[in-house]
Structures are given as C-alpha cells and as structure tokens.
Image (cartoon, rainbow, N blue to C red; front, side):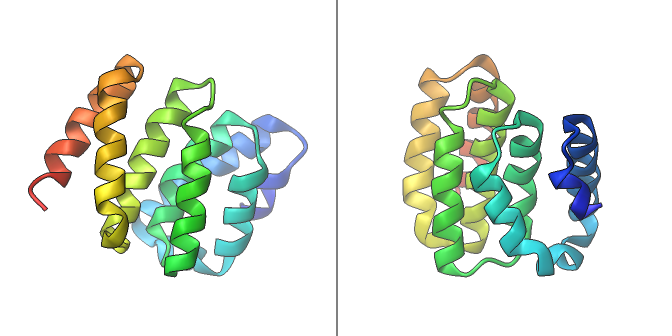
Length: 137
C-alpha cells in the first residue's frame, strides 16, 4: 500500500492514500516506520488527494518536536493550495498536532481563528468546530 503512494498513476496514488488514511485511524503505529518517507512525500507532492490524506494521517504518528514543527510548516504551505479540501484538512492536521505538541497550541489557535473568519465555507465550518475543542484546553 505505502509504495503505491508514489505510483505514476495519480488514481493509484489517491486510492493508496485513502486506504492508508483509513488504516491509520485504528492502526497508526504500524505506519510509524514510514514516517520520514510520508513527511517527505507531504513536502514534495502537489497532488491534492495525497495532500489531504497525508495532512490528517501524519499527525497520528509519533513525531518529535522537530518533526512536528517541520510538518506544521508543510501544513502552513497547504493553506495556500487551490483546493478547499486540502486547506480544510491542513487546519485539521494542525489541530491534531497540538494534541501531541501543546507548545504550538497558541499559534495554531490564532491561525484557526483567522481562517474561520476568512476561509472558504468548509474552512469556516471546520474552524468553528476546532475552536470549540481548542478553547477549553
């Protein structure tokens, strides 16, 4: 499954990313050994389907503080994507990183507040939901 993420056929890569993301919901530790490759792929891919699946899969893995910061930078870049889905999932990924690395919570909360005011309808809806979860912390 993991090797298919780099397939030259974007449809194969998209399907592999979908399977990986669903798998990671319950069994993320089994993907841990692929963490570096997945983060590298997230940094280099322009394919929107890979981006949105990686945005929510990678935060389910154990990340060091440095890895968390690197991935947060990648997700910040995704906020400039033309796809509303990529932007929305980037917001979710940033939120998910705060559970592992609370040091970025203030920065992420402010970013989500801003995107909730200015983003697409999907981003505003996701932002309202995430802010409800962030603010009681």
